Amino acid sequence: MKVLIFGAGNLILSDEGFGVHFVKYMEEQFNLPENVELYDGGTLGIMVTHKFEEADKVFLVDIVDAPGAAGEIRRYTKEDIMLSRLPVKLSPHQIGIQEMLTISELRGAAPADLTFYGIIPASLEPGNELSPPLHSGLQAIAGLICGELREAGVTVTARN
Image (cartoon, rainbow, N blue to C red; front, side, top):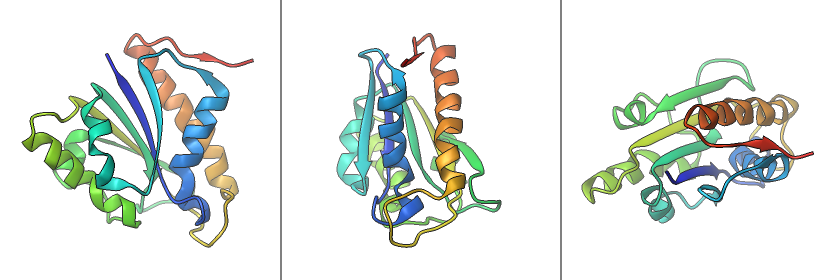
């Protein structure tokens, strides 16, 4: 089983860069087997559809515009995304999530299993640092994804 952990975001707009910061966090904190790929998708959106098509299981990590407090985490499945149950789009790169999956579905290459972990941002102001609630969210989402990986039989260990 090939697994993709895809972080999206813009590093120059504080919390908007969460997904990219998350990929770096995972690289620094965990040992992952060869079948798990960490990918910094930046703001490429639809330009990286092929990455989704290469994987059997995909975790997409980004910010999300949803009701709640900054730092709260939301989990959406592939079905939620395809049925437009995702909240209003927040950033330019998010325009591609549903479109990427639709294109992949039409080509018969969509991943069978896709989970979107979104976190509610505190700030979208210019800057390259995460706000405190989102900085805490790195560890929280890592724990959730590592738990799902372990349930799927993937060995994940913390770095010392």
